[in-house]
Length: 230
Length: 296
Image (cartoon, rainbow over all chains, first blue to last red; front, side, top):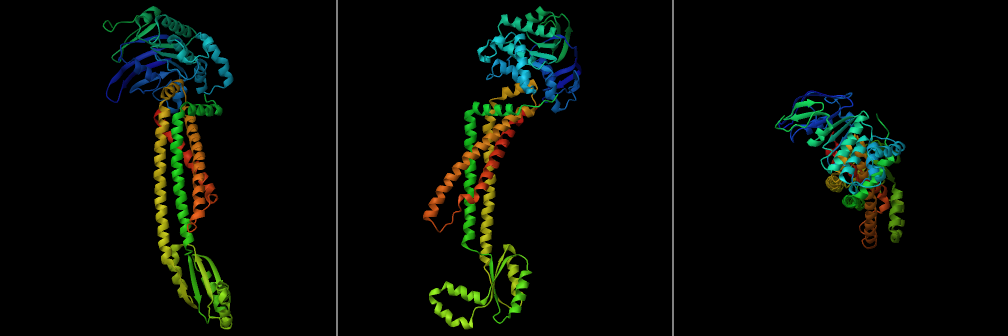
């Protein structure tokens, strides 16, 4: 479970990015986080990744209290998260296989486990036949699927996708979203930060709307509200 | 959960990194080996200056001339006294007879003169004393002069003092020059490796999100630093030895006045120095370049 309790984040220059945010996400939920640029979505993500620390309040993710976690434990905490970015952040000089394998290598998985698991993950995202390709040889949608495979490599409890459909063509967008829904159906918590109204409205999942650092709307089966109407 | 990392993997990554950033690797190696050769040349120069200074004069010798009339027992007592003094490295007793014999062999062509004086040897007994610490030489001379049956004490402590101060001046400049060269090489290496690290900053940031520990991220770069250090020291030593041997040959053949120590005298120190400085500079360069990426 992810639990924000009265979380406030104020940056050193005085900017209040989040203020008294209360948000609870249960295990296995699928949540869209929406809001305009500068609303505080990125800060929320950075707090979840423990790139930033909360100024006040408490933030718990599973067994970890992110307000108290010592630095040396942060890498181990992050292994519970699978991150997907809008710019994919793949390793350009590694093949599809190596990109996924690398995530497992990072946490010290033995080669025998890597060899067994990577093809399974690639089959989930439908890229088994492209395992030898380099990212530059793939379409945007395919690259994002590699990123998703990499995020899944270490069997994380939570998948966080930051604008996962922003840089891919419309047809592929639905494929990526369907994959995320499929992953969610296997019991993983999925958090998707997005600007895309069509997608949010289509999937009818829980939608958390952030504006000016506050959670202004939180409803299941919600719709993407325009700023003016929130 | 802690897992054991594959050591081979770190080495593979380090070699891949060096190969991938070939130009940077070449730059780092060139800079480091230039500094090493510069440091090595300066060290060898100073070493040879010292060798020559020591060779010019065996100055740490005091000659104690014994009273001509002193009996054997008194000379023996004087020997015991001298032995009890501090700061003495070696005492050599040269008797009247040995002194005469030594002079005779030195001036062989006038040996007939020595025949004449053999019966009435005019030379005194002599103690040749070498001391350990130059700063205590004056005190030792004073103590020797106070002893019974000492006729005269000859020494060259004044010249020795001058040479000692030249040596310490040279050492002082030497140490500072080395420190400055070392700092410069570290600085250049930091910047060279930093370029390599920054070209991989996206990779490093992606690794952090996956949950890589600092150890996992830093180790390949540190190994790169070690490899750069080792390659630089090996090539540096090779260049240094070729240069030095060429100078050695030229000096030995043409300038016999100046003593040049053969490379074999200092070879092991030179290799050790190159490897240590090379590896330390490589590792420090990598570690400092990586510092800003190692935040959580």
